[in-house]
Image (cartoon, rainbow, N blue to C red; front, side):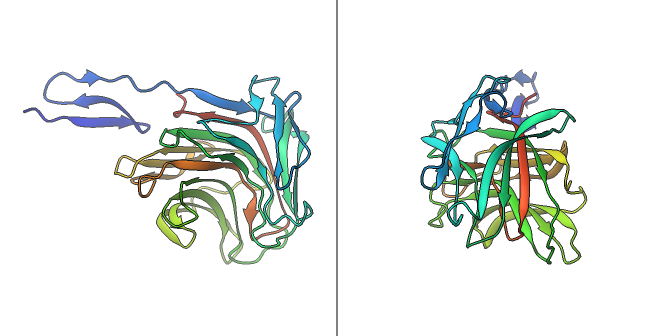
Length: 282
């Protein structure tokens, strides 16, 4: 019997190599699920309890907020330990964008911490949680104004069902600061915040501060060796993990599409030109 070996390119199987002729397999076409640069009449509605909806249709991309994809039940900014919107707040601002031109962007500021103060844009109760997922957006973050060693911040994560109870899995990106105040990247999958299943530190690629950079995340859901979790910044690979990207076969439950969270305050960030795809766009 002839043996066959799968060949992968960018996480996708293209064909099988055997002692016979290669058999070509067409990879899935990337599908754009959502795209927005907050242009046109996109706006933030008044908060309802701990949530604030982004609403309106983007005049450039044609997509309408909220970003309810993959069978999600809803999506909004979630204010957590926010001290009645005094510790953290959001707005849509007109600023100079990554191409040097005026643009509208989602702005977040965390003034102080009252516990686990944070404000993610959550896409909740996803029903199609075993699908591949690719997210990219432009982000601008500030440097620390009150540096202390071992400070950190994060701006993107996703979690599977039952992560909170200890049976699930989380993928999360970090910026850590070392003892001398130099920032570096950290990328991990974990069972809980204290128990990484795998982790990657990257000190070779500089962390851009006070300037825009493009960040990209890709996940291929699997509990086996064919799982993949990729993070790139300005086209450079921060970490590219092959192996399990879930635990106990749990699907993605919700995505923190953007996030402002960490132990360094005050901190600011701007988000623009966000895209969500089913695969890595060619």
